[in-house]
Image (cartoon, rainbow, N blue to C red; front, side):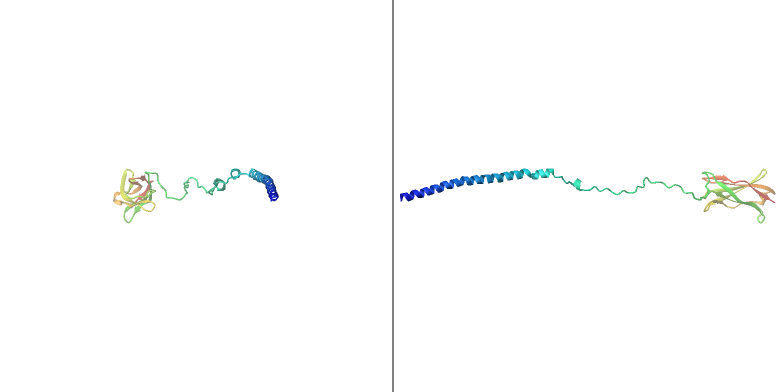
Length: 196
């Protein structure tokens, strides 16, 4: 029994020793593997840039870069307001301010009424309230008659001015018509009137 016990102990001891020898070997084998894995992990980490580095080196896309500036379409400029130039048109004759052009349309002896009748109008003036005066002159003799004036579409007309024959002697008289109003005045050229 003693010998068997010794052998068992020897076998156990050998197994223990072998087991210890395997353990260091295993540890050694495991050590390099672990070391290799660590080295590989380190190398891999070294070779690959970190997320922060990738973020810092990667081009950044900002709203300013991606957004496009909208340029308004050009609009036609009319420029400053222009005043249209005057267009030449036919217009009634206008007298200078304060003046009136008086025209005798008829001055003559009327045998039926035995009088001299004078008709006239004022050109370039359209108004009511003026006064027309016909003056007949022969030598030093002067006869006058007045009539109201009234505006029409284009002129101011004088009512007929009549000088009766009993105020006139036979001869060649000169007739002139004048016009006066609050805004204008004027005088016609002389017109001859023959009284029989």
